[in-house]
Amino acid sequence: MKRVLFAAVLGLGLAAPAFADLALATSKNCMSCHAVDRKVLGPSFKDIATKYKDDKGAVDTLATKIVKGGSGVWGPVPMPANNQVSEADAKKLATWVLATPR
Image 1 (cartoon, rainbow, N blue to C red):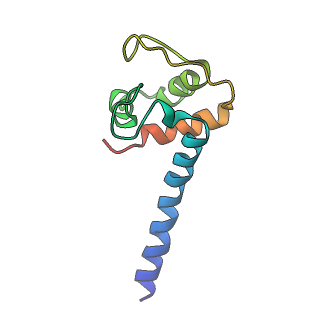
Image 2 (image 1 turned 90 degrees about the vertical axis):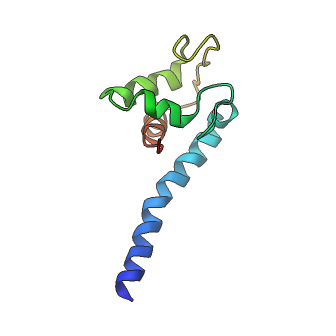
């Protein structure tokens, strides 16, 4: 019984950050142009995670794109700058996106 309870508590602890980052992504309006598993206006988070899976500097690259915007990587529609997103939140979002299961 103790093992089952420990596993349940551990499982909840591991799931909580994912919910927190989805909430952060929603609060920063990321979900207006992106979705976890399908293209909206921008690429899905799964596609982003796949594209950058072997890039050691991907967190910093994506965090910069989140704050400053970018263009040309995913087609002609530019990603606007998101000045309301702090560097710390941008890195948290980038880390979460890169951890999206492919």
